[in-house]
Image (cartoon, rainbow over all chains, first blue to last red; front, side, top):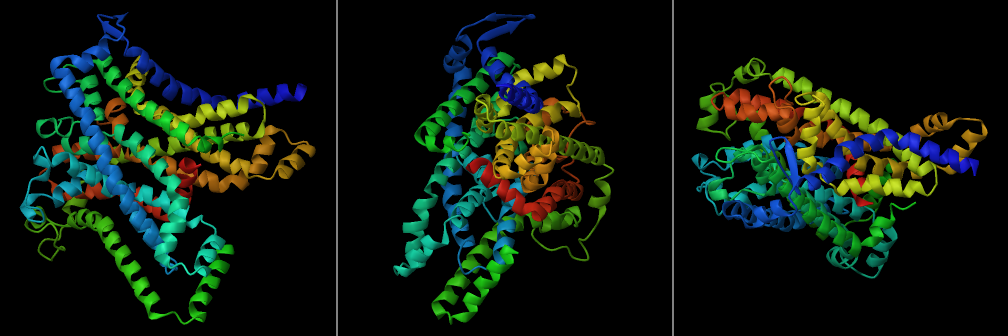
Length: 294
Length: 294
């Protein structure tokens, strides 16, 4: 009994510093942000407003138009990421784990990941330079047209981050035990059918993980769009996603007054969107969570 | 040792058997495809580096041409340190990244050691509380974070950034360190305790065994901090306290005319992480796949 007491004391002592920083600057602000979305502040006093901020955001003429537009754009931004990143990442991982590669494997792997180490500032800058119609590589002002601006920015972001799904799939592929592959070989399976019939089903759980992380990251998206457009929402609001809307609502911009309450409401909507999908994911693939249990 | 043995075995397999021509063709296809991907990943970066050594007309007359005797010039590299606060911003980024990473390492080591060492009922609860943070985007708590920093007079200080980045990095770091601590043989800790070692002494005996974990944590922690645009923009936007990522972003807006300097700034901003990643790519990949994958 006495040793249990000591174990508790030690556990609390050792984890207290991490707990304080993590709770103080991540957990509590997230909760406080949700709380803030139920209040209206003005003249130094804040009054409970119930769901007023949400109703305003979802239904008030011009505000709701911006919100729904940003939400739809955000799903498009996510969709482009997932649909392009996954197949390319899978192809790169399959090539990297090809049994014919020897020493060159590490070199390829490192080089292919380098774009993911860059800041969006350089990514945005260099791609805007490359696709500038002046040079004739592309004839069309991709970033200036409301139909192409968002997919173009999403593809720049895919170029930067495709190394991440590649690494997840690559580590899953090299973790497949050799005897399984040997057995497939002995059964006369060639490389192509071994990949699709043996390796692919074994790495399939990674797709779920990549999808959920891509969802979280794209619904937090802001940087690449800010790097290209500043806080302006692009041609006819076509590149406005929830992150840029949050920034403009919270800080204000030309033609928009700063509104922290409404900003917190936008952030809370994103928070709930992420919470619901993440909860569903863990509910469906609950086994994964078990790995954390001690 | 192990990897040397494996690679020798793999090579002797390749030499011992006379491979059919089809396998050679397959190898060629794999290399060709990987080289295409590497060119797509690296060429845009080289465009930036290369153009930083050219004159402004040299850049605009042929942005994809190598520097010639006529277009070569080093003014950009000289100007980058004269314009704006580049050196100062660079120093800010180094301070913020190094201090946040250091704090993350220390706090996550203590916390992960505690939750794996003291097997009381609270431990898995605490572990779950920390690890859920991997899925919680800290940006959504921005409104309360800014309010707190205002109240504590920490707005526009590097301290604000360091606190936020440490909180942001802890969940993944603790998840990673816990997987490494769990692999430490219990016998070692028992032996230490029998010898009368206290808790801190036990931790210091175990520490060398989790060194790969520390390297993995350090490498996955640094990257998003160095490249972040959101929190520098909101918490430390003044010229004196900007990080290099934000500084260069504003440089893009302000000094459009001085392209060579801009490109030199972009190159310098990206360089530290490219070098660090190339050196520590193995740790980084471990951190990424084990932190999220488990």
